[in-house]
Amino acid sequence: MKRFIPFLLLACLAGSATAQNGDLFSTVTMRFLSHPANYLKPLDTLLSLQAAIAKDAGMRPHFFNELATYSSFIGNYHDALRYYDSAGFREQVPASPSGPAAFSGYRPASARQSIIRMAASRQVTIINEAHHVPYYRLFTKSLLQELYNAGYRYFALETLGPFDDEINNRKYPVAQDGYYSLEPLYADMVRTALQIGYRLVYYEFSGTCTGREDCIMKREQHQAEQLHQVLQKDPAAKMLVHVGYSHLREAPLNGIEWMAARFRKLSGIDPLTINQEFMRETFNPALQHPAYNAAMKLFKLLEPSVFVKADSLWNFAPADRSCDVLVFHPPYGTVQGRPDYYRLDAARKPITLRLKKAYRHVLVQAYISTEKDPGRLPADQLLLEQGNEARLMLANGEYDVVVRNGEGEVLETQRLIIPSS
Image (spheres, rainbow, N blue to C red):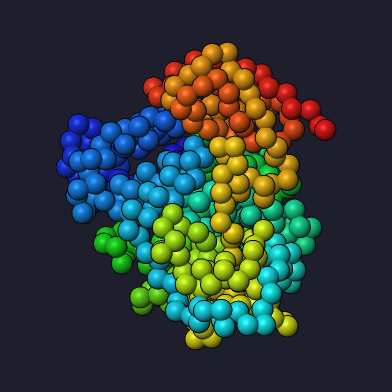
């Protein structure tokens, strides 16, 4: 099976600072795909090229986007935010009232509870993410059981490559199944869905296209058609779809009709569309949406929230119908060296692991012991720059802990058992 990578990859040749935007595959990325357990190698290689490539205005966005993605894979949340800011990508967010008056009469409410209630009466729910922010997957994971109880049975994921039911039969993801699912919290979202009983759906475009506009149009149309085909075969089915960025848009942007709008036109089904990526923190607060900044000053949010007044939810100006629900994520700090967003998963708890010796610049990975596939994915991992203690965030169970250096060599292994408390 070939892993599908659903975005323009950084193109750079080791030892050279020159690259072309049209190139799709980089030496860095291909090395990682060949040895996916070695999450440090691509990041270290990119960082070694930073001084030269960052000067190339054409390559800068893709270069820093890659750094953000690989940083998120190893749990370096604030580095991921910082690099993504440096990439210079700016999502076109609708203008809206953004001062304190914009929230007059509104109160924060649990986004999870509100979405579960709304989704129960819908056949299709679409929720998005920014690919460098792992906690979006924790939030989607928190919806899975209640949506299953409400009749949802299909879970469509942008990351998945073509498969012949291997993943549905195996009941856990491996490296060959996707790209973003290499990130431990994405993998955990997939693993949880399979254990609950969802059937995973592949719907990504893998055909040929020419030019940016043609590629976008073909990709959006293909995605909509693939999702529609699932419901044509099973008309009573309910489906959750986890996408990136603008694919959930129900209104055109820059003259482009995006996947959710095309799906609605094809199927006649009005999906519930949930945007997570607009209302969030950035490394540079000046890049945050003004409405987000206003809400953070007015309310101390402790959980992902929506803003409610009577029976209405706070959204952008009425003229914009890009999504149904805006989730406001609170800023997440760091607690004892790990991102605070792990508190979104009540099953995980901090485990301090003492290693056999002190190390420098190593990756500490915890794999679920019952998952035996060579391409199994870590349940948690962190970059340990120096020392002999690692703070992992894990649920109860048995784990194989592996310590790897920057070349991917295994330096130490341990069996870790976390009993039920």
